[in-house]
Length: 144
Image (cartoon, rainbow, N blue to C red; front, top):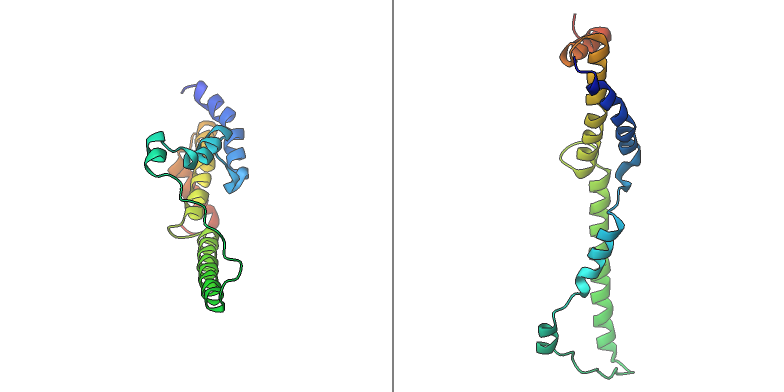
């Protein structure tokens, strides 16, 4: 048996526990956030020369009732579209089983935690991980 493996697993256990506790709040590093925020601002000089900015448009102070009604209808349709999109994203985020991002994150965290626990238990008890599962099923009364 290797004496280094259990020590390395014990050192990794706090990191794994912190990953489980952190939840979905994990964010990009600051330099990647800054790079992502600056990406839309990068425009080549050749493109700027080819597509000059349109001339400023004088705003008409008094819009007709028809134009205001059309604009209000478009804004209502847009707000309804965004409301539906937000509701769909919230539903997908709340789904903990099935093929969803939240379920995959939860499954990955449990795997990161219980694999080292099983290996550490195997080191100290001499019982392999499948034997540990079988013992657990016997203890719970599912198998004899």
